[in-house]
Every structure is written in structure tokens, then in C-alpha cells.
Length: 513
Image 1 (cartoon, rainbow, N blue to C red):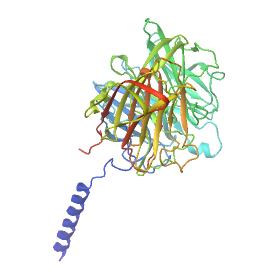
Image 2: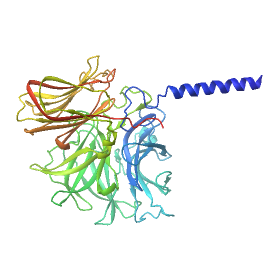
Image 3: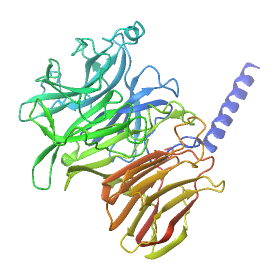
Image 4: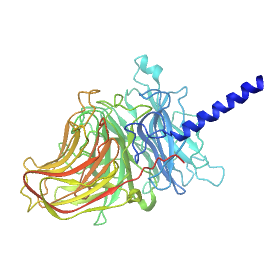
């Protein structure tokens, strides 16, 4: 009888496994991104520890594995060889007696300045913020400090430094998010650190002993919310000038509401950053509502500046969006460059070329005049759309494209030639009852009057738009009750002159192997 029970149990187990395999739901939940990075389960926010080493791009991230809302922060971990397909790895850093593991960065210690090296592999050193919840609940301001950990096996396992914290807190309530890099001219490690509504810059010869060198930002640009997740990056310009860009995320007060990312262009001498522009000039990395906490990869091949952001809005609704077993995704990786304009140097960003490997086929949209609407023969929910409009011969006051479904839910991407704005309108895009701040139109100033080019990446619940070669970027989430299956080009108030267009259906990167 006992053997019969065991045999029956085994058959039941096998049947359940077969049912699970035949109805595989891995990465198939409603609204689950198919070519953006998301955790397998649980909560995710800021990208952390972006580092390239020995042919691998590492993506660490703020992670709470036990819930889909923010909680005790860990560092999740994934690895890619091409910035397109990602492999999940075990959690890298867990909270300990010093606190939760908040945001930070990873460097390759090429010269073994730390002395951590014991074998052939170069040390990977993580620099991160400890957040002590006991101190926070007690009302103490000295709740955040900076710690380090290191890996000697290509980032697979991590050891925390026994003398943490390497920078204790002296009384600042918000003292976090170190983004460290090596400054060859001064032979020092440099740590930009967000402190309240300003930036502090520290220097160190060995990642263990740090000295404060300067401050920046109390009277610069937007200070409505605390500053977070800084990134100080050098660029070689077209005229071979070295310029520095400070990417600075802000928790509140962004151009289109809630959290967002501003940037400054200037110079850095190893200790002090100076802004080329006057303090009232506001420069934004992204004009959508859903690109926050973005930073760049350390040690990317060919010295490329590759950036990725958290695709949500911390201040407005990040904990509320209607997903199920997971919450939040990342933007696609973007290549950053710096262009000289009449107004000064400005950031330009485009999706990395590797994403073109996702294209399944291509559909050419011939040159033509568009009056009212033009339906595109679309057979995919995942799409890359490239459009070029001649504005000199377009008489329309508004033109662009519309994603929609059978329930008349729609997302509109357009150019308003009267107000001179490029926009994403998600006021009727689907679910929005989770937040009164969600169903809105987000716009960016658009001053070009001759040509409009749009590259749009459309996933299950997000769109990233790159305008005129990446001079403008807008990133927005949307949550339709059923998938968008229809794409239409449109014009209002006249004709739109389409010069060229291509639609690329895209494949998922999350097929279960």
C-alpha cells in the first residue's frame, strides 16, 4: 500500500510538471516586458554596479526578493555578453548589521590599489551605501554610510570589507549612491556622492581611505527633491576637447513631474566640477515620466559611454503600477555622446546597436503624403518604428503615430508644430486608476523646423522615443487592458510629408531555455 501511494504521488508530480511545461508562463504575465530587463520576481529599482569585465556586462540592481513593493534592499545580479540577452544570477549583496544595501557602483581595480588581489583575476570592488533602518526609526540623521565589498571570481561571489564603513556619516540624512571612477591624471579614485540637495566629491588612492574634495549644486538648476544617483563622465568631443557631464537624478521636481534626471556639462580637475552653463539653465536626460536613477557602465569596451535607467517614477507611482509577480524594468541600454550646438555641448543618446539583433523582419513604409490616418500592416506587439518627416513641406499642425487596441485605448506620439513640442500622450492609454498622476501628456521642446526623425521602441508596457538622432528622449510606461495591435500614422490640420519609414517586428529575449 505504501509503495502504491508513493507511485501515485510520483505520477501526480510528473503530471503536474508536464502541465507546467505545456503551459509555460515564464515571463508571460500581462504587461511583462519582453526585451527590457526585469527581475524574475519581486521588486526592483535603481541599476547598480554597472561594470564590464572579461567579456561580460554586469547589471546589479536594487532588489527586494520577498515582495513586489519596496522593502529591505539587496543587490540583485544579472550578466549579459551583448546588452540584449540577460542571465539571472544569485543575489550578490544582502543586508547586514550595518543596514540595507542601497545604490552604488563597481570598479575594476586594475592596479590592485586595494590589495585585495590573491590570484589571477583582477578585483572587482563594489562601493555602496549602507542604510541603517534602526537609526532611521530612531529619528537619527547619521543613518547612511559608505561600504565596500570585493569579488575575486568575476563577480560571482562577494566579500564585504571587514572595516566597513569606509566613509562614516557625520550627520547628513541623505548621504548616498557613490558612483566611483579612476582619474588617471591625479592617480586617484573619485567618488561623486549625493548629499541632500547637492553633490559632494571624495578622492581616495585605494578605495578605503577617502577625503572630501569639493561640493557642487546647492544653487544649480533643480533642487525641489533630494539629489540621488550621480554619475560624472568624461567625453572626448568632435574637436578633441575633453568635457565632463554630471548626470544627476532628482527625487522630485522633474520636467514632467515626479522623479527625473538632469545633467550638467562642464569641467573637472580631479577635485572640483564646474558648470559651463548658468545655474538657471535646466538640461534633462529624458522628458518622459519613466526614466530614473540612470548611470553608466564602468570600463565599457572602446571607452563607450553606455547608460541604463530604471523605468518608473519613484515619487509618483513606482509602488503602485499594475504588475503581478514582479515590479519594474530597466530602459534599454543607450549609447551616450556629446554634441556641440549653438547653445553649448548637449547629450545625445540612442539605443545600442546590439538591439538590432532582435529584428525579425522589416516592413518598408513608402514616401507619401499622410492626410488624417495611414494604417500600418502590423503583426507584432513588440516593434521598432523608424520615421522621417519633411517638415518644410508638411502643412499639418500635428503629426505622428498612434498605438491602439480594440477597446479604443491609445498611446499617441506626436509633434505639435504650433506649440513646438514633441510629446507622448498616455491620457487614454489603458489602466491608470492606480495613480491620479499617471494619465498625462509629457512633452519636450522641439525647435528643429526642417526634419523630424523618430525612433520608437515599443514593448508590452513601455515606449522609448528618440528624436532627431537622439537629441531628445522620452520614456513612458503604459498599461493597456489588452495589447496594442494597431499602428497608425496620423496628421491634423493638413498633410504630413513622410519621407521614409520602416517597421521592425522584434522578438522576445526571455524565451525559457
